[in-house]
Image 1 (spheres, rainbow, N blue to C red):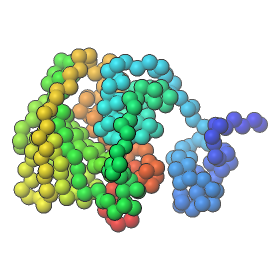
Image 2 (cartoon, one colour):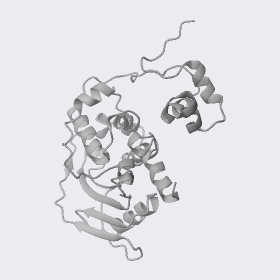
Image 3 (cartoon, helix red, strand yellow):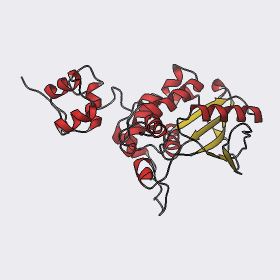
Image 4 (cartoon, rainbow, N blue to C red):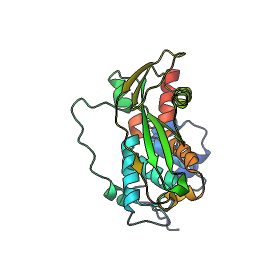
Length: 274
């Protein structure tokens, strides 16, 4: 029987079945078979042993300008590499696009300056630990079908890329304080300082330093209904989609720069001392 494998496949159906049935750990199997831990985990999480289709069923060869802007903003906010960004765009936003098409629409990444912040395993080897969060407030002017004026609050841990975001119809000082407290409870890292951009927060009950950076907030205007830009908005509310998008990135796909771990698992392992 003829077996058709992907051109870059490192395993056969027989090996894949062995991975799925074995009781050994991921790392033991990787060493035994001479493959990566990521490959072991991939096939253990699947029921079949055949290769999946490598492209979405419906491929957008041309993206709307609003989608291009959104995708580039998402890349800038998360710092996600191409493969992780593709996962967010396809699974998180519901925009079916191929890897090559996505790469074509990404704006050139800024050239890394000497002394730029290290990320992931490289940061740990340099003695840098994830102890700070950057907090941002972005006013949104959406189509009336999407609620009109909204406020996006989002935060990011720069070493792992772990992110947290919520959407509100209005903001006040108590809301900002409560959102920040919820953020600190959700973050798996031992946070010791916050960098806020464009707003201030008060954390009287916590020993967390807060450094406020004055920043003129620019309102992001979206004239079209979001359902025409983000397909998943048709199935769920925008606020829920935002939460799911963060979860999709934090827990969804292991990253090489994080030692083949997701951002959530990377920070949890550090907190446990692994």
